[in-house]
Image (cartoon, rainbow, N blue to C red):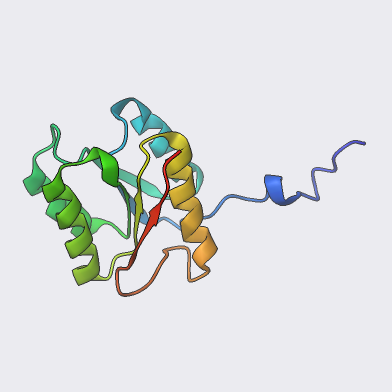
Length: 137
């Protein structure tokens, strides 16, 4: 049976639109950074990245958090200081923050998907800066 392109099924549904929101990705795999960027830009978002304190100066993280609309953090791949800074700043500023344990593309996509599942705007989890910890793959 041929698939009718005018009738997408659930698998082919349009991806979550980020509506030109700025998404800060903290941590993750250095080699996957371009994939993270592509996934954000495919969803009409703007991508910025901080490696979580491995090479990027931790002092750069606070202004990046302030500039972001949404934060996705690979919590298992950043320094403890960066982790606490992300959590406390997102809570203080009311930024939607998704913490994922894994560092790969699949975990990153799960984090993006959790934003869609919340149902409150495309920006995410809550106005209080709550976070959601997703299991890694």
